[in-house]
Amino acid sequence: MSSDSEHFGVMRGLDVDNLETLTKEEVDAHLVNTWAPRGVLYDMYASSLMLDYGGPAFIKMHTRAYTVTESFLDMPARAKAATRASLTLSSYVTLGWETGIRNQFNVLRQFGIPKEQSMEIVLFSQLYAGMRGLGHTYHAVGDFLPAMSRHTVAQELPPGWETEPEAFVSGLDFSVRELTAKDRENLTAWYERNVGYLPESMHFGLRHHPEFVKANRGKWETAIRTLPKQFAPWLMIRQNMMSGNVDGLRESVLLGKNWGITREMTISGVSSAVMYFTGFEGYYTAFKAIDDVLENWDGRVQ
Image (cartoon, rainbow, N blue to C red; front, top):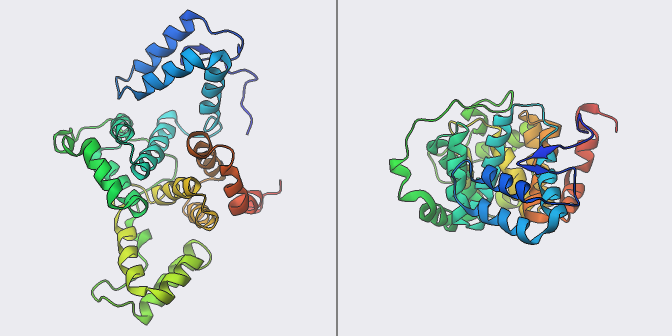
């Protein structure tokens, strides 16, 4: 997973190989690069704080870390950007950061994800963020969503990521309220096919509140309709890293693996959460949850 080059070179206007100095020219070039997309200003003022008070090494190591979280992925840069922004949008919906939500809608549109698909990310995230997350989303973008153009640039996503709404369907009979014996059999079979086992969370829910499991599972099955199915476990990885949920992260990664998310992308998803939300402590969660999965991915020997 090493880089093809021994050096980083110039990134976003910064000579990140030189950690000892930060010239005025570098500062100016970095700020111009940051402002180029003309997005929400928080990237400008966050970068300004690091430039003004962090010293040369901090901002340059930040830029290195930002780069290496996904530099080893074998996919187009635009695909990396779109999938990265989907994680960030989901995180900001859960955290309720309205400035960030608004920015990520703009970023996703720049990389081919229209507002309707961004809203699928929001609705899937609502399973974790509740009505509060939707409220923050409305305050961030609700007033101008109807006016946002439907036109987008061509969409580019990771190889093999395809829309498959039927993959979410477990066979629950939503024409009746109660969870029937056949519903229980079908849902159990879905998890066994797609994850490898029935998670303890489902054991508990099916035993103690089966009607709620049925209704909430219906939301899970219908939130993502036009985005590729891989977005579901991809977003689940971020949500469970943020909450430190060991069992939830394992379930997310196994579902993602079964649905075609690569080992390298899984690692990238984990490390991006560590960089932006959990610090190194997030690796505790990942170690307990998926170290053995990564070590033995497709029979690989480390």
